[in-house]
Image (cartoon, rainbow, N blue to C red; front, side, top):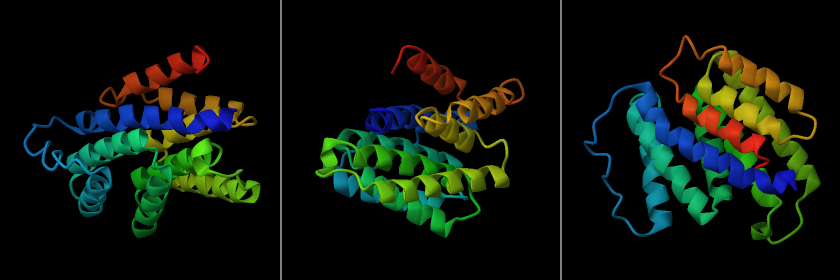
Length: 205
C-alpha cells in the first residue's frame, strides 16, 4: 500500500519543491516565464520542457527550475511517470556530476516505482525490476550527496524516498536531520516544502 501511495505523494512534493526552487535560488522576473504555456498538447509541452532543461542545466538555474516545476505539474496531471523516469535517467547520464539532476533522477525513479504498483501499469509489478530500480535510486541519491553533502534537492528526495521504505525510517530521520541542520545557514531554501511534507506524514498521508 505504501508503494502504491508513493507516486502521488512524491510528485505532490516535487511539484511544490520545483515551483519554489527558482525563487529559492534567486530573485526572478516573470519575463519569459509563460513562454510556450499556450500549448494545449501535454506531450508536446513535455517535449518542449525537456529541451529547455537539457539546454539550461548548469547554465541557467532559474530557467531549469521553472521548466522542471511545470514539467512535474504536467507529469502529475497526466500520470506519465515512465516518461519522467526515462527523461531524468537520460539527463543524469549526460550530466553525471550534477547533484541536482542526480537527486531528481532518484526521485523520478521513486515515482516510477509507485506507478508500477498502480492500476495504470496494467499488470502486476515485476519485483526483480523494482529491486533493481530501488538500487538505482539509492545510487543516484548517494552519488548526489557525495558530490554535494548539503544538496537540498538530494537530501529532501532521499529523505522522502526512505520515509516510504518499510525499513528506511531511521535513515529518513537521519536525512531529515541533516537537512534541518541547514535551516539557519540557508534561509533561502524552500523550507515550506519540508514543513508541508512533514505535516502530511504526521496526518497519515
